[in-house]
Length: 492
Image 1 (cartoon, rainbow, N blue to C red):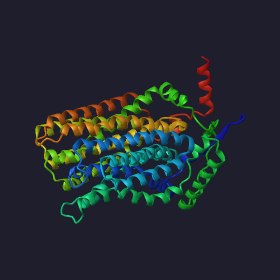
Image 2: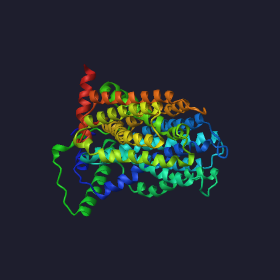
Image 3: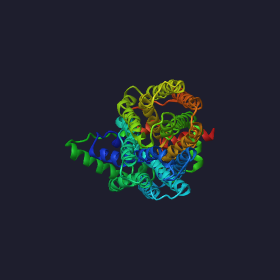
Image 4: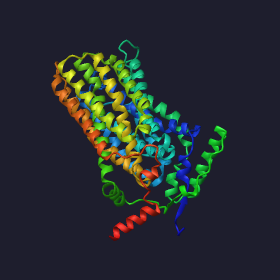
């Protein structure tokens, strides 16, 4: 080997591991990011109508939608900044830092005294969660064996809805009109649930190692070897087995580099992988608009169109969240067996078609609060798997050296577009005494059309990534062969 070249079996050794207690701890410690996000968004959604009361913050429907938009914009800023840091400083430092940012800001939200302070703290909490997505998705994909990666990723992303269920259960108690709590204290206590949960996870995260793949490509091969060896010893001890050796033919040769210039990131995204970039942007944007538009304003639909009391909203949210939680868990294995392209396109197209049909029933006035919830629970059982597959796609189809930045960029694109969904749909609902369903129906049709379009894009540009090593899906930019090809291309 030439000077500066590292020949490593780290990726192959990580991929041949069976499932172990280490992987379970990894999933619990890092997967909480989605639980926290689901908890945050559901609390805001459930208390949205509650915050319109004069004895709380006295917000309008548009201001409730605006608070959701500000939170999502905070996620964009956090994803871009912390994603950039994650590719430079490592996954571990960032998933500890971003959790701290979230814990502090969300806890302080409970002490908001007006719209301004509420919006500022929602923005900062959003930056922490946005950073979580980039650092955590990267770490999970790089440390989960390839044969488990698809359905594990979907299940983890689906735990967003476990957070939604926790928030729904809590707010059902806190916002109960017959309950003992003062209204202005009830909603504040809801924002302390996430920080309490996050504190318990802090200890687990502190004991997780850095991603061996990241260490390998950043000139820290010895440390990467120690991490993998420690994991292997734990697996053999816990499972009482002897791991098979990995053949030298599985080794990868790289020239480590500390930092990847942003120019090279852009060149890789839009020159080397333009189809994958278009696919990633489409999947993220379409699912984000659908979810943010509908979920953030669901409480307003129930209270304005079906005359549901604000304190009763969590009951309907519970069924909706349960359908979303079960979707990725039940359908997840099919993404590793049937295939990525078939399942991703299918879930997007089917959920979009069902949404259009349900919107038509809503506009015709034939639905009740109960039947609306049943229909949406069915739709989002499928759409939740689709949305989770968008994160899976973005996190596995780009080179390791820029994985977190790719995740953050396309996540940001999705959230920028999706952040306007709550504001637009909140305006379509309005505050009039007799709201007009036709305007909202057109909004549903638009969101449904976006999902169907994304499914068609997946059919054209989808990548066969099921049960495949990350280095085979997208070769590291630091690999010897990749560098040689780029040099030949530049010479031409």
